[in-house]
Image 1: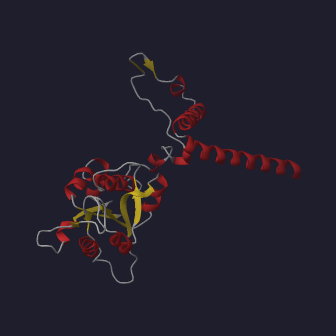
Image 2 (image 1 turned 30 degrees about the horizontal axis):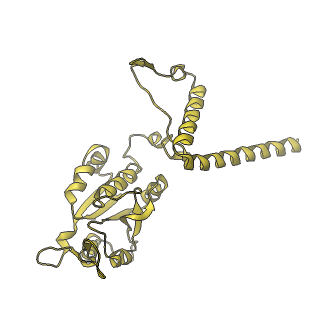
Image 3 (image 1 turned 180 degrees about the horizontal axis):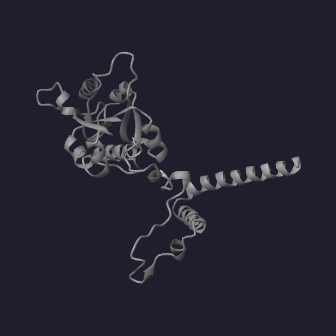
Length: 252
């Protein structure tokens, strides 16, 4: 998968996505992540990329021409008739990013991510690029670079081969609208706290039952919004199961 990141601070992108699992995946050729400095595509002799907002207001806005010039250079290798890459704009007014979005973006062959700065971006750049606006939470950052790294990490880890086993994606937080259960490792006892006995029992059915119950309790306490969706789906599944059982009994 290829991810192109248009930014004013490419070194910030590389400092995050050049390390750990994503960094190794890039070295192995599983992920192709490239950062582009929008200033390099400014037609201003001082490489300016910003200007004052029309109608007045505080701060400066990133201008459309350098952004579009950068995008045209980034996508110059795309042949006529080929599908355009999915474009994302990191914005606090965008849709809040979820694991489902990560899965959706992971199905794309190519992503282009625009990082805003200052007071934002000229709306025309967003419209011309047909960019989907994405937020990573209800807060404001100084720029879109960290958000772009988060998106790239969440999407990149879903690409086959990036994580060592497919099982790594199972039983994670937000899968099935549940938070992940508590996990433990050795030593068995540490500072007076012991690993729950059920995890040492070797009884796999009981272990799975305990993990589900812990996930349910954590989710209900910390994310009631997720738990309500999980509970509705669980009740619907149980009702469908009872209906099938009654139908089977009637047929017999």
